[in-house]
Structure formats: C-alpha cells, structure tokens
Image (cartoon, rainbow, N blue to C red; front, side, top):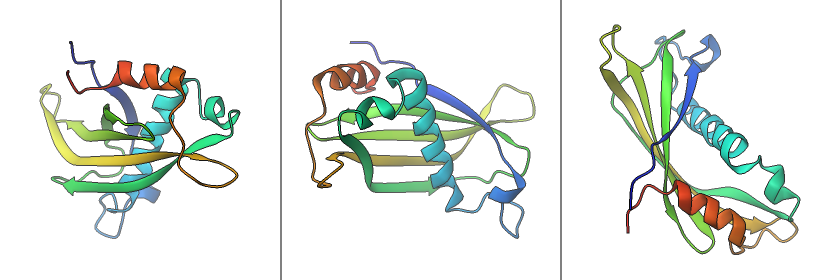
Length: 146
C-alpha cells in the first residue's frame, strides 16, 4: 500500500499570533493546527457541513505538540498534515510545521503536533461511529500502511 502525500496548508504568520518575544505564542500553534484541519475538511472532505447535516460533528479529545523552533511575523509556514489513524469513532491527525530556510529548499521543522478527534452526535454529545462514506475517504488519506 502506498503512503499518501501529506495535505499541505500554507499560512503566513500574523502579528497577532506572536508574543512579546516576537515569536508565535505556543497556544497559537493549536489554532494554526485547527485552521489546517479545517482547510483539509473543506478541500478534501466537502466541508464540516457534510457531517453537520447528518447530525454529527468532530470534537478534539486530545492534542499535543513538540516545539523545535520558532516562527516570527511574516514567516510562511507549511503545515503538512497526515491522517495517521481512523478508528471506529475517532481519528488522529499529525501535523508538521515547516519553514523553508533561506531559499535553500531545505525545510526547518518548527513544531510537530497531533489532534485526536472523536465523532459525536450533536444533540447528546455522545460518541458515534464514523459514517461509512466518510470513513472510506478518511482511510484514503491515512498515512498508516497495512
């Protein structure tokens, strides 16, 4: 089985995302991750409305990050996302935030992160199975090999 290429979402860092040291504030990386997942959902999965219309949605159950470098205002960062796992009621995405170094073509890894999502029924907020059609699409995006 071949491993799909990561979904890449490019973001230019804004002043408001930085702290007093002039670098992206640690908590803001999670908002940038969320923006990346939203872009994936719009471009590859038909938007969040696709599942909202079915009375379900996704919520974050767990997240984490390892900080390896810093980004500053106006840096252009590529967020490389892979769907690492698709379970019965949950999925995990992993994201690497990369900045090209000085036009050399070499990328510097700034942050590695993950988000674990659970699919829920909107009325009760209880976990539900991932719909079959969506599961198939997510599995097509999965980085794990069989």
